[in-house]
Length: 566
Image: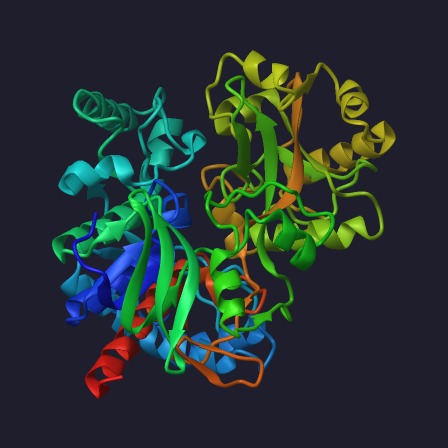
């Protein structure tokens, strides 16, 4: 428990935005505390791929790949074609570099450049094939001490052997483990390290991807002596003398009132797990399940509204979309698997609707694919859709929650997750898909795969599509015929990777009321603030990049407020 009840800044939520705000504010001399509703720290950042989108960042520049901020703004103008929010996007480009440099210098957050990771709309003006994406260095979780068990792990389907994380650059070694001596040596090295780590810890201590970012942020808070209250649910905001001055919170030790001299930051992660808000703000066809981390039930939005704040839902979309496959494990756990980069674009798979027809390029970004599902569904039933592959594909690349080289498929088939049939006709019957359409579609696709030219949707024709494919496969890294029986499928439904509709704020992340006036002492960050992208998804990491940037800016503004003696 904590030994005092008054702080400069109270941060509600322990995802990237909340922990960044806390780390920067504490380093700037503010007395801060973090409140987390669940029993685990890290929010959805711990589930994520850890990509951080920051145009014009100095890490890339140091690696010899400089970006142009004006080009970055032109790209965002092209992909987010609305004046609304442009001032925030411009500020993001201007201040993102500063925020990342600060974190690298003053905290345990260390980010490295990802030299090649294309923008999601590579044909738009200002796009880049790299230079804008960072990721955390691998992190040794032993540095967290007693806090390591309190860090939210990735979803189990993203780990091997019940607790081993695999970095992006090591995936190819696992795919080639029996074909390449260097790959075998690398896999053996990682596996032996993991076995050694498990002798003394509940899971592997080598953290990568978003878990590494969460771990590094948590280590920063530990080093800065920032108190963290877990399993503590904020019940209400306190207003005094015209400003938000504290919170009422239920803690494991009982209800408490905590005072805030400067203010309160709402960073609870949006509303992904609020069925009421999903019905209000998301399409009826959206899955009721979310791949987002538990705990994001709209608490921050509710608190903001009770203080006079306004939720702005005037976005192109009110969620970040991804096709997901859903099933229930034998232990009763519901698995919601986001099909982001591992299977849709690989050679030898297609996605069809009930008519057995493809309706988009499968190798587009997950958000674009979600948009395509909704658009196609207006003309022909396309929700759910079906991701189909042959047996060779399943063995080599996996399918959804099924990892490559899986020999026993029966648990997935028994759970009605994986549908398997000896012929395409039989698979169509099993799925309830029009077999004539499927056979015609696969026939055309197989012909195109041989020539390397997807005549229907140009899959594999731009740099991002190629990135999602298998660069070792020719003539097109995204195309291969479906030939080897049996044939397999999983059902896809659009679900969210986080929500977009959030509290209206100004450029200092201060929450605004219905008249556009500042609610003094109240900030919003992360998914509790309206996304600066207004429903578009320009590139990898456009949630974490703004989360770190605006978390940093909240802390800097709070320090200025303290200096003014508010």
